[in-house]
Amino acid sequence: MTDPIPLFDAAARSAGRREALTEAFRRVLDSGHYVLGREAEALEQAVASRCGGGTAIAMSSGSDAILAAVVAAGAGPGDEIVTTPFTFIATAGSIARAGARPVFADIDRNTMTLDPELAVAAATDRTRGFMPVHLFGRCAELHHLTSWAQPVGVAVIEDAAQAFGATDVQGRPVGSLGDAACLSFYPTKTLGGYGEGGMVVTRRPGLAQTLRELRNHGARAPGGDGGARGSDANAGGYARLGGNFRMDELQAALLREELRRFDVALARRRLAAGRYLDLFGDLARDLPIRLPRDPGAPSAGGSATDAPLPGRHVFGQFVIRAPERDALRSHLETRGIGTGVYYRRPLHLEECFAYLGHKRGEFPEAEAAAREALALPLWPEITAARQERVVAACTEFFTGNG
Ligand SMILES: Cc1ncc(COP(=O)(O)O)c(C=O)c1O
Image 1: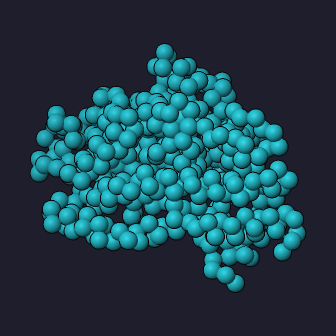
Image 2: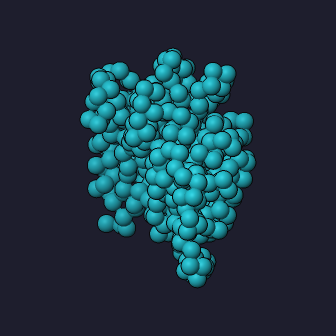
Image 3: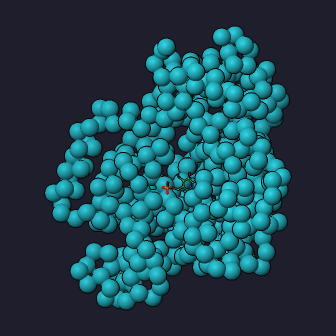
């Protein structure tokens, strides 16, 4: 058999950059400062400026970033946050960990992101926030949500874990579209680190201050860094409970190094996605699959190739829809091709959310996406030859020519 193609190759990115990464590592070793220091501050500034301004607060993970953002937005027991059931567990899981109730609204069939009209319809007088997810690298539609939420003082928190670098149709970066945005730097993300990491970006100074305190057990600090660094860390006392959501300096230093090649990596991701769209090309009209595409564009034949991509989709994953998803996946596996199923069960049907009392059939679009979505191999360095093999193996499955 020819060489296997993984779903994602996290090690490929360090090729040719070992010196630079090692240098970042050495810098931290020599500094003698290992948690929330100059590296984290520099990373915060760089990420905030890429999100169009505001303040960034480095966190231990994307999940903790969401938890802290929900708490900082004032949501807790008795409050509701409206979100999508078709997302990673951390979205609704972190809302629930903050003590609030996740309220699900169905997704849009074409984008697989939260349907803004259904989200607004799900709001009650207990709604404290909306949490749309920029799924698979594609910016969710926020305009309708923010214009409804802002006048009534309801927060919009972007779950931007999968989409740092993406923009909306007007070219505005994710991270600048709501009251706060949560990022993840898990290795497979568009800005991936070498371990765990996350961040919240916000333009609201009050939220930023609360988030700094929350990430350091709630320690109040007039200087605003939550007292993380001094030997008298609790001098200001603890007005509220937080946690240890701090970022390591090593992680921050390596992420700063990753940020230097971020534009190149994004361009390569988009190039690779465009190549899939070209390779599937007209075939996609005849095959029972759907490619990621612009829902606003004419959908003649359901092909992606004739549809401009809205904003800048950063293809955190390249996810197709296929009714025979599991059989296609098994076929690709026999050809040595790795794929991913995001997400096999929509969250309203997960056991951990049984207490919400949902039933199968309540969110039909999320349920259909969970049956059909399949992520194909994609990372910035994937070669054209490997992508050709992936597309050939898909075609072979549908046409029986193998
Ligand atoms: C949509 C979404 N939200 C939140 C998270 C949580 O991020 P982390 O893994 O950094 O905790 C992830 C990443 O895995 C994600 O994909």
